[in-house]
Amino acid sequence: MKRKVCFIGLGSIAARHIKNLKDLYQKDVCIDVLRSGNGKPLDEAVQSMIEQVYHDFAELPFGYDVIFITNPTRLHYKTLLAVKEHAKHFFIEKPVFETSEEDIAKLNLQKNSVYYVACPLRYTNVIQYLKENMDFGKVHSVRCISSSYLPDWRPGTDYRTTYSARKELGGGVSIDLIHEWDYLCYLIGQPQKVYSLIGKKSNLEINSDDVAIYIAEYADKFVEVHLDYLGRVPIRKIELFAEDDSIEADLIAQKILYRKKNIVVDLQENRDSYQKKELVHFFDMIDGKCANDNPVEWACQTLKITKGEQA
Image (cartoon, rainbow, N blue to C red; front, side):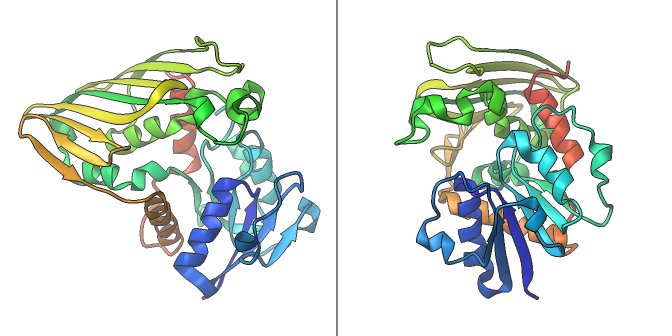
């Protein structure tokens, strides 16, 4: 069965999804795009995969199987309101919305539809290994860090002009790096209490927050999370202090290290690997093969944690 898909917004992540969809499903997917017209010209490879380009919501036809909402975060809620009748199912890029205070009732979410919020790091080999092999009931302390240097994020682009640098566009490390809290909630559930310190402390030329530090309490464990735009050498890892070992899961090196047992598990893959796994999982939800494990309501709760609004 050929699926009719539309992307709202066509930045780098949308282009990656389009290429991966075509790689996975080839002629079984038909892709349209709605874009503002203010973005960069499409490269020829992506252009060749698109059937139709629209520039106004009024032009958009009804009857899509899936709409991918891949425009800027601050536009997600308004976009979903505008296109909620145009498709059966929705794939929403992270973060789900800008504030977590949006009125979900107005969206009139349908019970038989899937509204899934993207969370690609869940599908990395490292996080899947932890999900499948760790007994988190025996883990009583967790330390998680994601640190990298914002000016290095997008080579060839002035970091000061990006949404990450601008609070009014929904930027800031606390929201940008929502991945950490997403995969933590995926692995161990949402915390009972969270205390946070979030602010701008560096000399980066931005008005968004560049450091976010959290301490969270669960019934049987404490969790520390550190996020920043400052790390000149990128770090992205989670450390688990369990009853029988101390385990380090490194998402950059793509390895699991059991410190006491001195065992290393190598889990190498490329980015498209886990991005494709997420797309397959999403279509499995649509086909009723599995439940939606990151619906809008859950993603809003994760966003509240990240923004320091849960205590």
